[in-house]
Length: 133
Image (tube, rainbow, N blue to C red; front, side, top):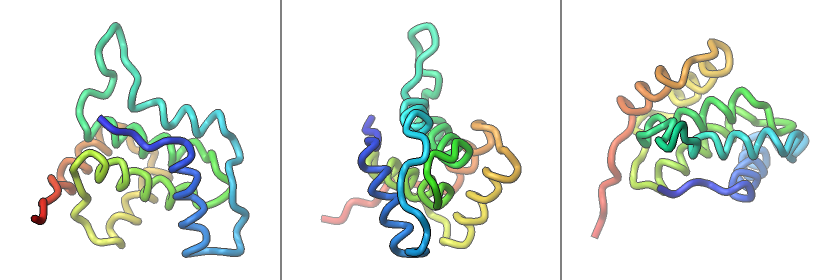
């Protein structure tokens, strides 16, 4: 399993701010919260993965990045792009249109969705990447 690094997620945050809202402050507000969010999908309990499936790992990452507010700005956008990146790194892709993805990301922030709910949604709305060759 491949995971995004701290530096990759910081670059994602920088990119989404420059693309969508360049007047906003860029940067990490709470590095410990960012590191915690990125380590969460890798956690184990009694020697077993706390989040055993790709969808549960992605859900834990998504929820943590949205709710931890580790960046000064663009936390939800950074979370969405980071989860998409995580899935792509591991051979999956989200299948929804951008509007639905944004709507779901806001729901994570406002409705405090549980990892199980996020995982279920991700499973329904993603698929293995088709290899072109």
